Image 1 (cartoon, one colour):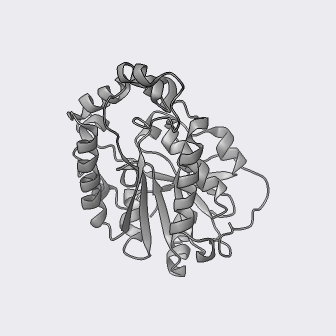
Image 2 (tube, rainbow, N blue to C red):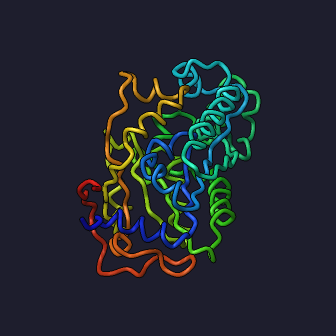
Image 3 (tube, one colour):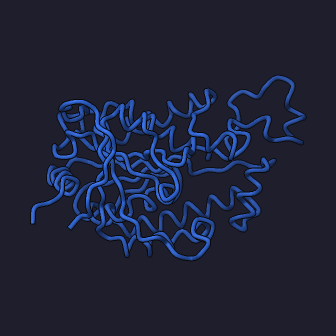
Length: 295
């Protein structure tokens, strides 16, 4: 049986022995969204998972940060993130991939690079005034990158340049930003601007109740393809994130959902182009459509 376009594309990339760089905003996103594909590709190609936002910050915490810590049963954010980094390494080591924790501060704890004048004392009582994203619901999850995150965006772009040099001819996997978390959208923005061939992965489990940014998918002419290999093992891997799994899946069940990857229409059947250049486009941008499962 002939491969579907996604499998054919992945086989071509793997057969070319070019590096694959997976950008994971947080310490679980790569496995949540790409665990099945990583389990297959990690044994066949040089794959690196670079997790960007791997650090918290000391108190005082915002109300949103305190609610998150309560949800995970943790009292200290820095101790929690040390545990999260350890569990991420344990899980990723099972996938035969290289691991890079970049060390940027998670959006829930990220403070303004330059405090607002006259807010020093107030910030000790009301930490929100010193944050890039003061609240989760009204700021961090609204699908917009703050102007105060310009330096963070530059650092993410620099990480891509370091780990996937333009001359490498490699492939970049980046989050689609489903759910609107600013950290995910920021990483997506860095990938889109990188000039490298990019495949976007649909952010699981947030894509179970939200859709992609239609303007972004249209602008990039993206076509959705499903990947169904390795989903049972993926569920086991997800359970390795013990600090997060109960909050993500309160009923204790990890949905067996196909992974969804979005490729430019031409790239869905063509391999990456010359070093640092995407495959040539064909025709106009297309809307997103979901393909059938991978045999």
